[in-house]
Each structure stands twice: as C-alpha cells, then as structure tokens.
Image 1 (cartoon, each protein chain N blue to C red):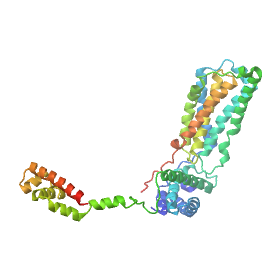
Image 2 (tube, rainbow over the protein chains, first blue to last red):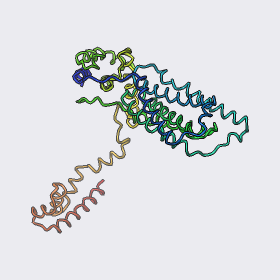
Image 3 (cartoon, rainbow over the protein chains, first blue to last red):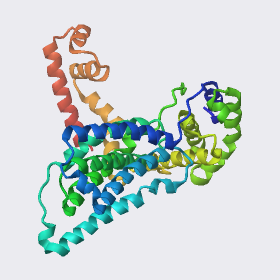
Image 4 (cartoon, chains in turn cyan, orange):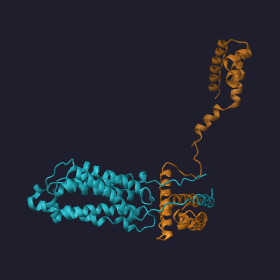
Length: 220
Length: 173
C-alpha cells in the first residue's frame, strides 16, 4: 500500500476525538485524587505523635516540602512528556525539588556526623519504608498510569520513570507524616532509596507499559 | 488539525496529503535506505492518527508532527538493528562446498553407467525385485502381486541385490 492510500483510509476514519486536557488540568485531577488517598492512609496509620513540633522545625518542613514538590513536578513532567512537541526541559522540572530533597537529607547526615561521628550515621534495617511507600503510591501510581496512557508514548522510558517518581515521592511524603524515622541517613537510604528504586523500575518497564496504540483502522 | 480533531475528514485528508512530502523528506534524511522510506512514513501516519487527540491547538503543529516522526524513525532503527543482529545481508550466496573433494565423491556415487552395469549383473529375480520395490516404489505386497513371488522371497532378493550392488559399485570405483 502507498502512503497516499493510507492517508485516504485514515481521513475516512477521522472520527471526532476528545482532546487531551492541558498537563496542568491533569495534574490537578491526579493530585486531588492521590492526595486524598494518601491522606486516608496517613489517617488510618495514625499521624506521628510529634507532628506539631516537627512541622515547626524548618529542616523537617523543608525536607517535607521538597519531597512533595518532587512528586508534584514529576507528575507534571510526566504529563508534559506525553504531549509531542513540548519542550524537552519540562521533563527536567522535578530536578530542583529532587536536588533540594537530597541536599536536605545530605545536610542532615552531615549534622549527625558532626554531632556523633560515625556513630551518628549508624545504620539499621528498616522494613517499614519500602512497603509503606509502595502501599501509599499504589493508587496514585495506577491512576498515573491510566492517565499517561492517554498521552503519546514519544518518550516512554522518561514518562514512566517520572510517573513512578511522582507516585513514590508522594508515598515518601505521606510516610514522613506517620512513620517516626528522622535519622537522615535512614531516610536517605530507605525512603529516598525506595523512591529511586521505584523510578528505576518505572524506567525499565517504560516501553512495555507505553506501546504505540494501534489506530484501530483496518490496516489492509 | 483542530478541524480533524473535531471530525472534519476532508480537512484531515488535505492536511495529511500536504504533510506527506515533508514526512518523506524528513524520513529520507534520517534513514539511509530509500526502500524503507514509505514503510516508515506509513508507520508515522498510523501513529499520529492513533494519538491525534494529543495535539494541543494552541501549540504549533509541525513540532508535534515531527516529534512523532522522529520517535517512529528511532523505533524503526531499533527494530532493524535487532533484526540485523541475526540476519546477514550477502551479495553472492555462499557456496555450500569449498573444494573439489566432496563434490567428486558425490559424482562417483551418481555415476549412472556404473549403476546400470551393476544392475545388469544382478540375477533376473534380484533385478526385478529392486526395480519394483526400490525404483518404482511399490510395496512388498504389490510387488508380490505383480511377480507372483512371496513377500519373503522378495525380501531375500532385495537384500541380496543391495549387497551385490554395493559390492560391485565399490570395487568398480
């Protein structure tokens, strides 16, 4: 078949389509549902008892805000990546928030080290973080997947990595509110590590999760 | 494109027809093999049709189109490189034999005159059995009906004939 014939077939198949909403609108929809779900999980698990004093602590507040902003910006970037022709820099939007998150954790590690030497960096296994983050990010992640599949897979690996980063960072934000674990090195390894792991897994399955949709016209 | 999203088929057809030369040029520039250009252009057309709802009318059309085109060319390149990893393109089909040795061996066994001679040397019963069962391909039962000999005697004749043929051909060559 010649491309000219295909053009005729496709033109005859051009039924009206519902336009993809702008990334901002989709972000608001995703955040609305996901934050409500995360809040529900936090409520079920019980807020940490020292939450009031923690929120007054600038360091904790900055870290929490950076984690949440990472989720928001990664989600926005994932939605943008599904719209062909949008500028590439949008996909790097979560980097500043991500950097602030790592910096705040790194600064915390440094303070512990300055205060207690290597003792301050004592490291234990924590089996709460990864499962909790996965639990919280399950619904946001599934919703995100449904939403990015509506977009075009012009950057499948980046898109799913950003989507997993968004869901994971939202999970980490919620975890900070109900899990009383404040040693920066622990948060860095177990919470940030879990989110990084999720984002990596997201990148690995990108091509599989976001194939090019078949146009649904007879290809003969 | 905005009209196409709303279902205007003639506007969509006109737009795609107008875009065809641009797509062809774009693919030809990125893809070395001119034979594949139309295939990739069709891939791009199908893909853009499938995601036509992702076009935002407030943004320029060409970057949208060319991003999809670029992506599909990259996908085609990946497909072709994974295919070529287990395929080899050759100009001349390689010879299945290299020297004269194996070939002359085959010619020896195919030596018609020697086989004819050896067949002629067999007894009548042996030759008849060989011709019916091994050359014409009759079953032992059919051959037995034709010759009036028992299946057992045909078997003995064939066995002896093959032995004699093998002996006479190996001694002759």
